[in-house]
Length: 107
View 1 (cartoon, rainbow, N blue to C red):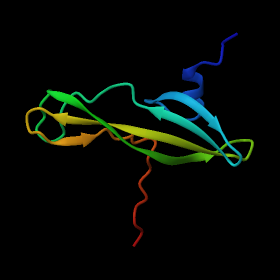
View 2 (cartoon, rainbow, N blue to C red):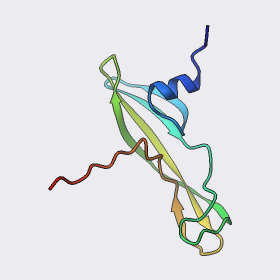
View 3 (tube, rainbow, N blue to C red):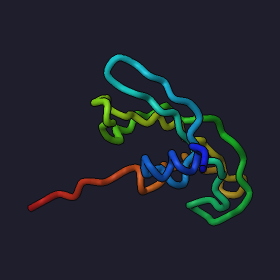
View 4 (tube, rainbow, N blue to C red):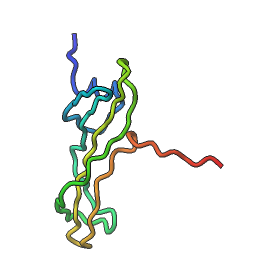
């Protein structure tokens, strides 16, 4: 008999590559606070590995799907910000591409 673990919940909700921190139920929605456990290894501009923490970004709400109870599952993502010591540019950590689906323009 297996226990219900973080990995089981992540695979059930299709949330691989993120850490789940907190579940916040409300009247119409269920909010799930998520984040990434790793910091980036290189600057996206100059490829330097000298990065410093530069605060946090705004909390973003990502609609993920509808649960069996009829409530909407909304992911709360707060990105970490970093500053490169070489080129002095700052950037935000992006959510995994599996969470954000970009709609393509149909012509």
